[in-house]
Length: 381
Image (tube, rainbow, N blue to C red; front, top):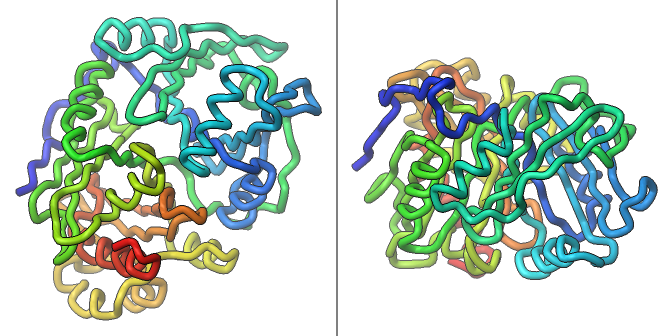
């Protein structure tokens, strides 16, 4: 059974107890940020715009900031841990491998957002503080979410620098592709342990005022061998969307079980990136070496019967292994990469929306069967 809550009234910004402006950055803790920055530049078509490391006074970590439209990735590795923060990042990589350590959210007032969240039960990790340079002042604070993931709350209304104080502008590593591969972060998916999904949904409802956008349970996300459950929470304007998954009992190990085992606990499973030309995106990224999940030809034999006409002809969808889905609001096109590191953990989704506010429910069976084939190849099904 699927319950859709899209018709719930949007929260007016002036009445929102936890207003957000959007995703500020997806922050990765990685073993080698310099090499990771090259990968996301050359394979994902992102542009290096800022850097902070020993060359500008930071002796502990090196951080590279890459952008593509409104999407911002920050890749950080530890050079030599000397503080609690450096040790935290080093331990994160040692335990989880390369992964997302922070889903940073831009807010109009970081002090008020932090106070509101902590008052309603959030675990405060970093109390509000200011960073300043010649470009102005940024206010930052941080709260905990599932696993070792955090939300840094970023107030940058009085700042016009390249990223944050301490960062300097950097030249691109490689020339970006002629056409942008994606424009924004569409949503970020978290995997949590069995029985914890509803607790984290309640956390976002209570602490951040997010509403329940969609729910997938029972047979919605199930194959012959594995199953999972998912609920989606979002801010009132749908600028920040967080699907939260947990495993469900099935015959074999689900993709969520596999992730939890190899990541060492809950964390961010995948980041969906919005593109306005998924065909160009897939061709460019595939030519740069990005591997996408394979979809059998039989998926496309009946696709036109229930999806109807889309911007991309059926033959081209079949050629590029792009999935399509339609709901009451429109349709979407999507494709998923294989994990982008050796551990079968973090991967990416490219999504092109044409009215649809959904997440590709009609594709779940085909998608998870594709993931199961990869799990079986790894010996983890």
